[in-house]
Amino acid sequence: MYLQSKKLQLLIWRVVTYYVRLGTLSLYTKSAPWLLCFTRYLSLSSLSFLLPSQTLHVQLGSILLGNIDFLRRTTVRRGRDVSLTFTYYGYVLRTVGSAAVSNSSGALSSGRGLGEPKFYVNETRFNGDWGRPQRDGPALRATALITEAKERVWPVAQNDLNYVARYWNDTGCDLWEEIRGSSFFTTAVQHRALVEGSALAQELDLPTASYNSQASNILCFLQTFWNGRYAIANINTAIQRTGIDANTVLTFIATFDPEAKCDNTLFQPCSSRALESLYVYFGGNPWYLTTLAVAEQPYDAIQQWRTLNTLTIADTDLSFWQMVYPSAETGTYEIGDPEFNTLLNAVLSFVDKEVEIVHKYLPSSGALAEQYSRENGTAFSARDLTWSYASYVTMRGARLAATSNYAQASSAPGTYTPAVAAGAPPGAGGCTIIVTFNVNATTFYGEKIYLTGNTADLGNWSASDALSGSAVGYTDQRPLWSFELELPGNSSIDYKYLRKEPSRTNILETTNRTYSIPVCANQAGGSAMVEDAWVDLTRTPSRRLTQSLPNVQLVGLTKTPLFLPTLTISFLILSYSLS
Image 1 (cartoon, rainbow, N blue to C red):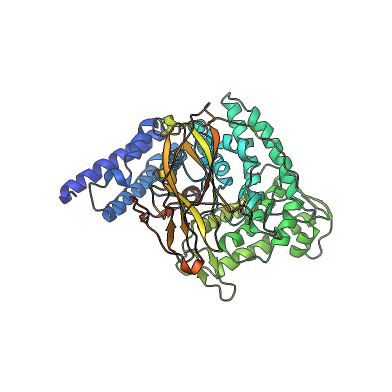
Image 2: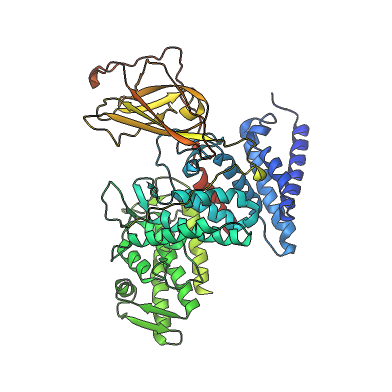
């Protein structure tokens, strides 16, 4: 039942606006805890009894935007623009909430669930097919949290840092969610996260040994991506590619340190390895974010050369220099030498032309899509891509600053606890057991096996939310499909296997299965394995018939997925930069 009185609606919104403003200001005065709780109750679901959902969404959004403007106007006299504070702590709340959700990548008790890239907007698990786990996520989150709030969010960042220290040497999906293996981008941002996390832990008088030891191992592993000519985007993969990818350019700017030297080991933007890799990459597909990235890296390099007052052209990166300045020669050039400014100006002029390409194919509305056509420059693919906007903002900041295969087989185990003080629900997390379900099920090309059951972890009997199996171990001798998930210890489940046909019909197992998850031996949980076999008759692809499952109704989903961590971080950067 909705409240129809306009006067009452107006009164309610005025009260909400007042308390949101008051609460956000309390963050600035370090009285945050009550606001975190209050903000959580300002979700759309909490206020949905007030107004129809569309009106509610618009008015709540107006209040939040108005609140940001209010903060900007009322805090400028304090010498600091805190318009980002409200957005930032909203991001912290979402991070805390999603971290406690058991998901297709795992659960919080083992830490594996922190690598899950995708949730529904109501912070529930998404079981559909996706590139998972994505091990850059915890590292990027930790860096974002540490950079802004330091000790206030340590309980949240610590979980992500422990994840990096434990799982950095395990394979995962690359930046584009296409290839499973070891990613150059992921490895580099993991190193940065542990270095910065260790520095903060030391400042807070907390243990740093695991972070320091694994940061050294990661840095050693990072060197294996250099093939003598350029940095390889992905290694340890089943799919063979050249490794020439914008992944590497984005790495150089993601780990850029304006006070660092042109260090090849760290692949800093001004290093000969980074510059040569950039030279090799030129000519990739015209995405806004990649075009802007190949401009941002040299802008960062110019800032480093100006800070160091010197630059060196080596044999390694001579190709890059002769691309931007044909008469360039190897050697070291100091500030005061005529060639020093000549070379820097040549780089600046060259990459400015890359930005001009973006301006040329920028629609009159200013909207940035994901890509623009090679043939005619027309924008296409995902429209209004947050990453594209954020890339322009960071590129612009970089220009302003410029002109004014031997893996280390080690890891460090850590413990993972819900950050209750930061807003995680009490009792979240809990001990889980990593259970592997193996089922022998002969399939034909295009047919897949799924797992469904009576819990949220198994999709609540929803065909659309069933867990997708892995056929990596499938052979003619053993038609193996496997599922690995974390389930609460000392509990039981009902489950069945499901075939999804290329014709989009489902063939449902008639066998009723149950399983009792073992009791956790300790906080780390444990592991278990279940061996099953598909027992129903199999038919030829043309004669497959859809069967019904007794006493179980399979329903579709109407929820809308959201790429929560990546979009929120990008919006965070964009909001701050445009304020």
